[in-house]
Amino acid sequence: MSDTLRIVLIVASVLCLLFMLRKISQSKVRIDDAIFWIVGAFVLVIISIFPQIPSWCCDLLGIQTPVNFLFLFMIFILLAKLFYMTIRVSQLESKVKELSQRYALDHMDDEVKQDEE
Amino acid sequence: MKLLIIIPAYNEQENIERVVDHLIQDYPQYSYVVVNDGSKDNTAAICRKRGYNLIDLPVNLGLAGGFQAGMQYAEKHGFEYAIQYDADGQHRAEYIGALLEECETGKDIVIGSRFVQKKKPLSLRMLGSRMISGAIRLTTFRKIKDPTSGMRIYNRRMIKLFAHHTNLSPEPDSVAYMMKSGAKVSEVQVEMDERTAGVSYLNAPKAMFYMLRMVVSILFIQVFRSPIRLKDNSPENEE
Image: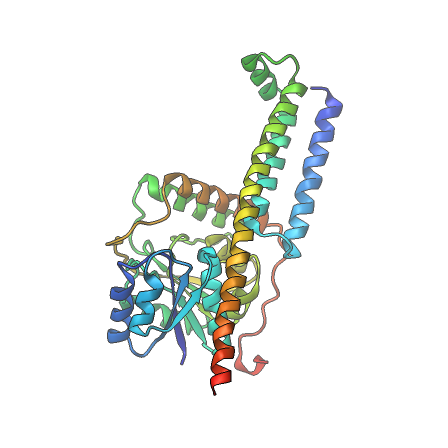
């Protein structure tokens, strides 16, 4: 890994951290959801400070350069996150559906009662 | 109408009757509300049949969301104190009085702690508790001996905050954040029972992830959050 790449990674991670903390103090993101990005940014910082870690993984997996390993690693993490987000969105949608159905049905009873009175 | 006991319940059909009946019979001086968090079993049906005071959430929100609903109820009905009380029978009602008494001395949050006088056992289960204690000590310079205890009592100004804030939940990281914001937090020795029926939904991987989440949150997030401005707790400031 070149020094320039390492510096870029560190700066990007720190910016990511600051951005997330700002969003948390504005109450725009839940801490549970921010943890992923905070931990991710830390991992990037560690990888850039100790480039031996990706080099070692490269040797292990037979990848030629550490930067390739970095790409593979990040794509994998992002795919996993995307998959997880897909599940979350599905669950959210079914919850919203359930909620609206229940709300509508409950209020239907109200209207019937009012008519009876 | 001073103290509200908030009982979040998720799939607690084996325990709920025993726990709530005990409170109604032996502690009629306290009000209570059961928050059914979208249980898939008969928890809601049992509560309705027995005529319990029930908030019935139509979908599952998780402990934080269910407890928050209870806090909103406490806020709306003007309760001065609210305590979180497990539906699985782990918490003992005889200690509610001690917690309330301590909270009335001007504390914001009082934790029912298993380890004020007693030593924390050296088990794997308590390792996480130690890590969270350490993180709180590192960031607030104060000792919380049993941060993961779910038995906590909150006063009126905490009720108002916890009822609406997105990132305040009944978890150790919120307690740490409130301490950093200047809230008075203390602990009272209590005993807890093992759950007698049903299963805890905190299995080993979940427990590990929970600990990681708490430690990261306390060390790296709560430290950098700007403190909440706490309003004076005197009754004249009620709007």
